[in-house]
Length: 149
Image (cartoon, rainbow, N blue to C red):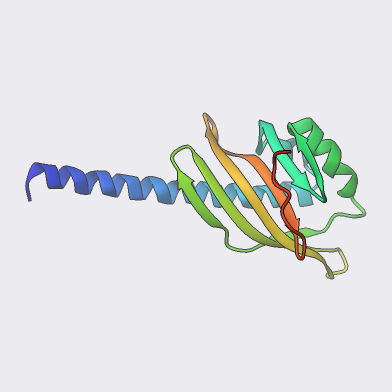
């Protein structure tokens, strides 16, 4: 094998390892979004999103962590909290940006499934790791409205 082929093989292996590390980090991020919200740790939850994050759910859109928190927190009181169960996400990494789609079910405290749907996430690599830059929650039977007006 000449040096060029060896260098290409080494570069391909490095790229493959980077992709595996990125997708593992994104999976942990998506799980953390559920765990922190389910546990009522809103300060920790919003830090999983970029400062300028876009968020869309139930026909409404927000931008920024504080607007997102103001929209979601009233629906996540201790009495209303349950568990967000997520499927294996489909993740596509493109350098420092990624997209993921993840099916979910929201299970109430009485173990009844209250809602199902899909998260459509835009992710961005920041200096401290991957964060959610945009999330649209589409309930089963609804159509996406998009993150932008």
